[in-house]
Length: 335
Image (cartoon, rainbow, N blue to C red):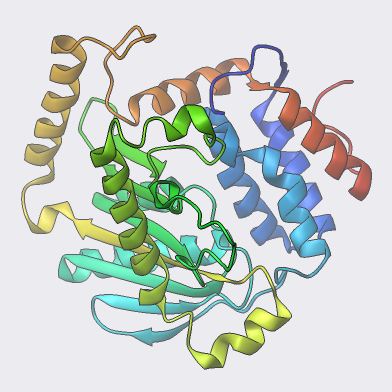
């Protein structure tokens, strides 16, 4: 899904930013919220993470237009300790509340070494790497996951679904280096992508069961830390979930202040060594030309796409046309 498109038009970053901000404002967001939302989605495009980029403008704008999500939330801290904060996301999609949560986590980590913040109740928060990178850019290691209400209830189908494909919540770790690219795992917990279902994949279950058991465990842990730990099942939030049907999720972000444990330069040097050693001493995966740790490709693509323009494939163009027509906003490229 996130391979570069074979056929595309080039879209400049600034024009895509202007397009997204205009669409979100037309959907009811204020200027700051619209700008932040667009910035995070365009960042995914720049990193080549097409699945979580601006192809989602139309769907997210629709959530605000139909009042499935709150376009004008009152995001506030409702509980706080020296190391933790709990935020009320007031039924909006998870992007803005999670940015605020990340900022709180970093602030507390800088004060006491470790900081954690949770948000409830919210809708989809997109790529978990948005929030871990906020931590990383402030000299912290970042960790983030999201969970949703009812995760693990497969419903009453006559034929039970295969547990090997159980759930796929977002998860991210971000670790800064010095000179080499950072190590950023920005992924989901399942060994398979959501579209990888069917007999050819079922055949893998008995061949590599350990891989599936690991992803089942990762899914359960991520869902509980990013969901149940936030308190989103408390009865007091039922009215919010009824008013804003998209707000069935929670989110968590953890920041670890590297400098409270070891000199940042010393740790960064070890990160750099690992990144360079892997690149220089390992053979690449089949079909690839280099051995890279997660995060390296994204850094390269961001620099390239900022310079050359973002390759906008068919799904991105189709989504942009839908929202442009619906909200009367000019497309960010020439038709």
